[in-house]
Amino acid sequence: MPTIVALFVNTASRAPLTVRERVQALENRGIEGDRHAKSDSRRSILLMDQEGLDHLRLKPGDVREQVTVRGLDLYSLAEGARLRVGSAVLEIMGPCRPCERMEELRPGLRAALEGRRGRFARVATPGGFAVGDALAVEPPA
Image (tube, rainbow, N blue to C red; front, side, top):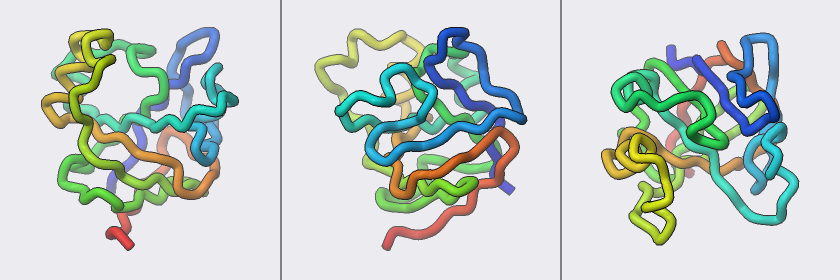
């Protein structure tokens, strides 16, 4: 069963959240707890698989809003597919394309995005979730 194995948000400590700590996904605003979560910009959450993180040697805090999962081939998910996790629903967005900011990204993160090891998702239904929660995949509507 696919599960969340790590959560990182850009908190003051930049430490990973533990299994006891829940985060709140806010519609169009990413993850609450990130110091930028209250901004008006629409941001997405980066989903990474554990194997990809291990391979790319990304460190905690390299990605501002990151959910790490185990047991799920993220890139096999179609655009528009939904992940139900805790009381939140995340909708898979299209693959990352090179953009102006790509050169500003850390090399490991850039490799992850260009190598299709990660997927971005937007918050379709706000809600809370935590490390250890299972993910249920729903097909695109």
